[in-house]
Length: 320
Image (tube, rainbow, N blue to C red; front, top):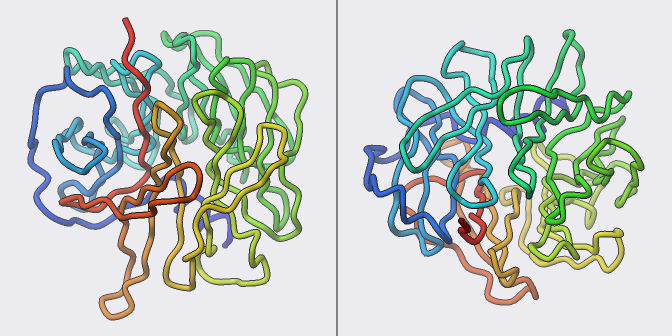
């Protein structure tokens, strides 16, 4: 059961409609400094949108049939990788969306589900998680953009998920589930030298995100109260050094009805945007919104957006 809800937290954030999802802005050439996210689409699906960090300039990037999730920017901010079942209902594959011409290319099409793409800093590879052979666990793979060079990096007894490439391209952070624990680990980009950064019994440490300078990792965790067992973990946003030291808790407001997930750094490393999930006690269900905080823990505020927001990803500085 716990594995089922953690997959929900990671990859199926919005399953109900809210607001008008018509394409509001089709100027794909002005996405520098934008935030890509998953939002509600038509017929109880979820689509990928882009907006400015202040919640304005909203535009929908995907409108085809099927669900879309896990947006990940290319290093030059000209393309977005994502997971979608647009070709086969129930089976998610990895695609790339070209912001300049709107072209969509399938990169990974394995027999099982493929989720959580993360672009390498050099732009030549994508890391992702896949579940093969009907196993109840995930492994982390890398693949070239043309679909060649598929490599299983983990192939371990644990369930390894949510890869995040370090800015220098040498390491990959990820979350690893074994028993009641979900911890953050790092490994070399070839899968060697696994190092555990968190190690707390019964704690959920999820959604690792590297700072632009590679010195810190933001993540969501319920390490402050691991004894609490709700439907969803009461996660706060934390940062730690890339060696697991210097842990800092940034948010203080999680409860049985409020939790924080999916941190993402601004290109200058000064701010962190993340998703807040609130339980709607009267209506039932969950509400997903965008919040932002300075990297030093000051100026926590909610960003006003005309729809629900999940799985935010801040674009890097646009380069040639």
